Image (cartoon, rainbow, N blue to C red):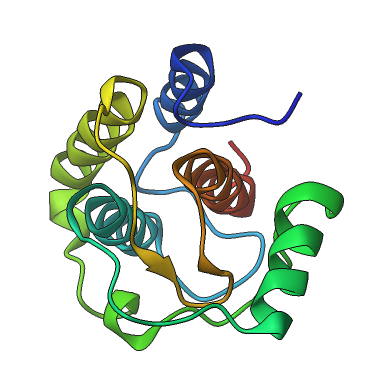
Length: 150
């Protein structure tokens, strides 16, 4: 069974892992600090939980990438470039690490109790279901927590 942030036990696992993260953790790949990574994850998770789908249609390439990334590949590739709006390099204050971490826990805690469909179009996967958003969000959080060794 795939891990999905919409399931409380999976969200609890992610929260337990982030609780082992400190501001001095160094990335095993990439250029973000721990604070920048948390700010990035918070930005993405807030968008997933709050925004709605536009009028974009899913392209065949997006459908194939979705199947590969969500159902076949064990995790997301290292150093993959995200959307510019979620680029937090140089935008996070390390002194605010605990604030970012607290917000991360709060947002992750919302996933299992979310009752509305998650309808935001994914930039790489197109229009995905609420269940697929839960899988994608888990894989994204897992990717960044592995990046920092937690």
